[in-house]
Image 1 (cartoon, one colour):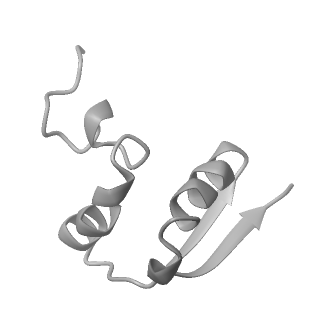
Image 2 (spheres, rainbow, N blue to C red; image 1 turned 180 degrees about the horizontal axis):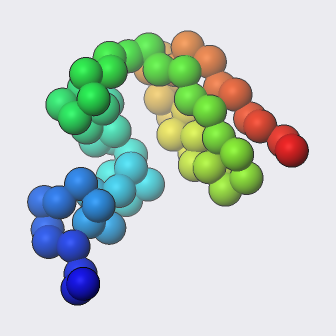
Image 3 (cartoon, helix red, strand yellow; image 1 turned 90 degrees about the vertical axis):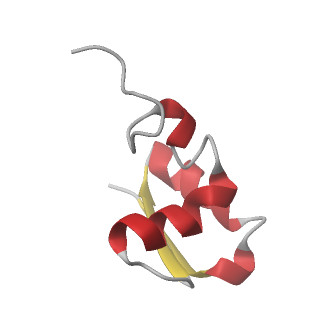
Length: 68
């Protein structure tokens, strides 16, 4: 299968945690989602959501942390 090509949405360099400041543009461009965001995270995803929300509070309307 190989490694995803640079520029691919699944390429590690394009992952939201690799470039958190690029997340709003990626969401708008690929999914038509505009800020403010409602972020939801389960387990490690919750840490990722908090990592984004702390310095970008103006872009986040709500943060949902799910515990099962």
